[in-house]
Length: 189
Image 1 (cartoon, rainbow, N blue to C red):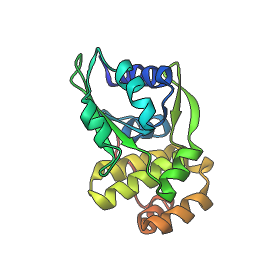
Image 2: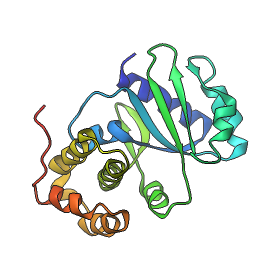
Image 3: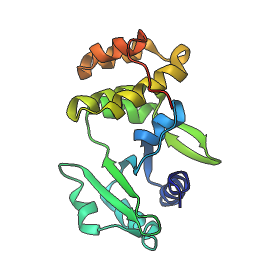
Image 4: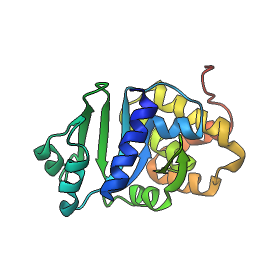
């Protein structure tokens, strides 16, 4: 199973379970920017306690998903994962927290045609900001490169006021300004 096939499989399961989600991470940056391979998938989920059985039911056969880990994710660090038994790829599920940026990102998510399936995905601006924020937490050329790829492809379509507002609040204004000015460019593929 490829990363793309797994993404569609997970999207279908979340849709059937009626779990509110958004696709983020490298698959979202690939959608908006320059494609690259990844070894995990990232979803932000809004998962009330009463929806946990539905989630577990949808992922029961082809995934290793630990119910106590899912329930524990209702508290810090607000994260659990599932391992696809067919491919050994990992899916990271991040619980939607009452953080102003995360709430804004979730409210702005878009329903798009992703590889033939309707999927909820983070906007291009939010992918850029999220990647820059993660680079602050765990510096990585991949995070900056993904953000640069989205800027390179979406440049003229970006809401720069939104980017500047959250770039300042998230403390990523410096790298954001360098990206927007073309001083940080994606690596050639």
